[in-house]
Figure (cartoon, rainbow, N blue to C red):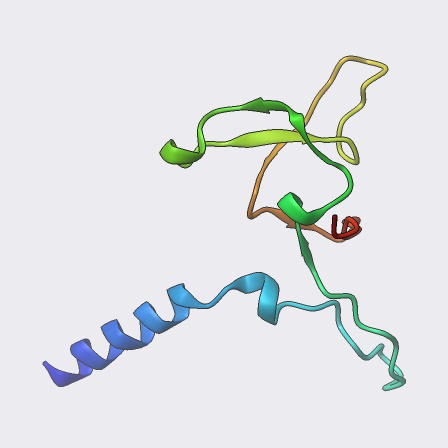
Length: 96
């Protein structure tokens, strides 16, 4: 029974880890030479995330906003992302 309890504790610790804090672009290539790492940026901190066009509610956990990086506005296709989503194209917006 103690093995199940320790497994449960381990899984609870893993769930609490914030992926954006630990995930980074691979820092070495196949030849072992280093290249700069890119820290992941959450959508809510990205310059492409536009809160002017939103849907859902923060209190219900379904709040989404338009991401201009992934939307094709000329064709009328809009991609909504959540605050905690992230991608490799994100650029952190300037602090106001």
